[in-house]
Amino acid sequence: MNTERAVDAVAESLRAGGKVLAFGNGDGFTHNIYMSGGVARFEVINLNSFSPNGGHALKSRAGRYTKITNGTLLASAGSPFDIPDGSFEKSIISGTTIGKAADAINFRMGDYGAESLLNGAAGIDLTGVIVNGLCPSPFFQAAPTTTMTFTGCTFNGNPPAGQGGGTFVGLPG
Image: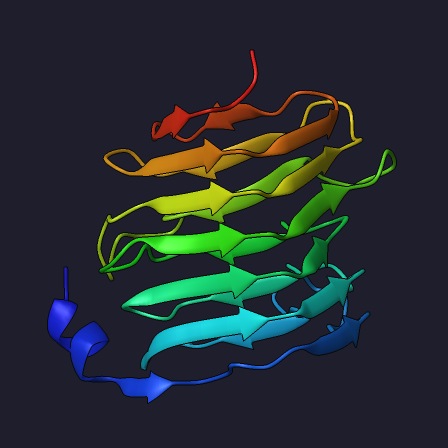
């Protein structure tokens, strides 16, 4: 784990919101919002990210943490959120709606540490999040040794499962 890179990186990237619709070129490697490594803290407030073309609504490789507050993240082919390299401090999603439509191409609702734990394994807390899993078998993915915690969340549609070997606290069922 390279915590030095996370700690010494640029202080903050984005602390604003807006609407992002249908970015990406359909290859699964481009996303509506992508924060590359080398940024320590990525904070997004009031962001609405819809219908990325083949990618994630929001993907963050920020090293120290990612914080998403009061927004909407919807995706069909990719995940509504992806924090692929973990984080040095706990990442947080609060007051946000995340979702998959009934005709979604894949069923991942969100990922934490799914590619590596380069930045750490502090985990992620989802608080007051509305989870709309309308696809057939929605699931969240978290790497082994990490924890994804759901507190005060509302689950609509099909109940999501946890996959990837991580610990999931507060999922229904």
